[in-house]
Amino acid sequence: MTSASLLKIADGTVYDPANGLDGIVRDLWIDGGRIVAPPSDPSVRAARTIDASGLIVMPGGVDMHCHIVGSKVNAARRMRPEEHRAAEPVLRTPATRGGTMGSTPSTAATGYKYAGLGYTTAFDAAIAPLAARHAHLELIDTPCIDRGCFILMGNNHYLLEAIGRREPKRVRAFVAWLLRAAKGYAPKLVNPGGIEAWKSGAAGPADLDTRLDGFNVTPRQILRAVAEAAAELKLPHPVHIHANHLGVPGNWATTLETMRALEGHRAHLAHIQFHSYGGGTATQGSTAKRGGFDSQVAPLVEWFNSHPGLSVDVGQVVFGKTTALTADSPAAHYLSRLYGTKWYSHDVEFETGCGVVPIEYRPRSLIHAWQWAIGLEWLLLADDPWRIALSTDHPNGGSFLAYPQIIRLLMDPAYRADMLRTVHPRVREHSQLAGLQRRYTLSEICIITRAGPARLLGLVNKGHLGIGADADVTIYTPSADAEQMFQLPRHVLQAGRLVIEDGELRQEVFGRTLHVEPQFDPADEAEIGRWFNDHYSIRFRNYPVQEAYLDAHQPIA
Image (cartoon, rainbow, N blue to C red; front, side):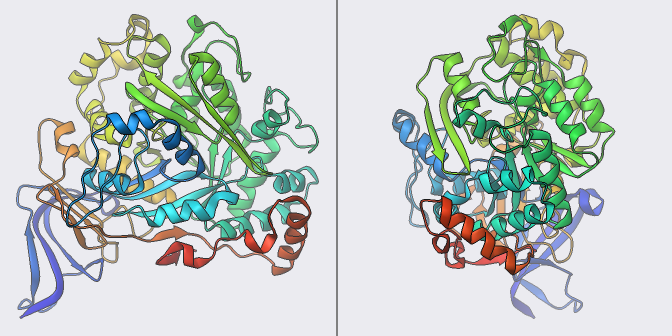
């Protein structure tokens, strides 16, 4: 008897570390977009069987920190037309749309390329609430992946005012309301307090205890207040932090103090590579000599390894041309001065800013070579792969298309040594990389690209292949060359739908928007509304994102 809804993946070598499977040959059964138990009746057959004999089966990839939609991504697309003209386009087929490439691909191209690497879920890591409606329209236009976004809060005037007045209940209510209004997944802090200071013409905070003019609040207080609110709201993912002084020599001290300031609260530190620099000074806009630039991963990873409530993604730099785009407008200004390139800056009223700067990472540049090495040091020195996620902070450190190359660097010490010989000699001499012989296993790669990010995000149905999990499955052809293996999966299923078959994109499917709906006292909304109507250029009723903008919307909590 054949079941029309059943799909079977037969005899694959399964890597599913969340369920303790490390290269075990077994079958997977799929029905209704989920992994299901094998039929109890042995006479029941699947409508379709995919023969995975000799192939590697993993959950679909989860990119927990990237920038693929929103106002700054669109600014980068407009700012760099030469990139789109030079890059080979994604051609339209009977099953798919066309798309443009470059460091900030179009929505369709982004979805297709993620699927082409075996990724089935991605989160944009920094969306301004005021621009959330348009960002969601882009998210639902991004095919082949489930998607979500983090909501910027670290320089929001309402929140700064509530923190400065020591009103934790008001802070908690606003965090909950803002996540619901913007249909976001987690609170995001970017350079807490620093963007607002810079927008007001002042220097960024020298340290976490520098008081922000006009708000009676410090970066340390912002960090603690939002971390506490996220914990009290029981959000699936804790506060997601882009620390102060990104990219500035000497910023490792700020990063370590940020970790300490959280005082035991769960937190995720984003693109940790960009915050692990020695030398110079940690003041934004520093004129520190480049010769003082080096790695300070060792003291940071020592603290990280001993504090299990912390997690990070890497923000690995890869060599080549890309576009730096960030809600951290002072960091973008700093880069524009450093490299003398064109740049773009934008102010989002009462909320945040954004900056866009073209950049090219060169292996013979001392700073760029250190950035490349620092990311790898983090990945190779962190004890617990479940708390460190692979990312390039796409496109800031490079494109997500570089993930296969990074995986090879982690799995192949000889290849890593060959690459190290091509970079600036001072980095070759002083980086810890030369002495690190750790070789990632396939199971560990599965953790940092799938199982770990899903767990850190609180996505209980993703990152694994157990009964009830979303049927997001990637099937790879094993190869001694890890880059080749992870560059082109044989098959990819998103929610049980075959998107990639025999290495080719077969259909355009659309996933879900993942967001949270934390509870708050409805009486608090009236007070928030009065403040909005007094300060914003739009009316309060027009601010929240309606569910219609999410397509097949499905709240997580």
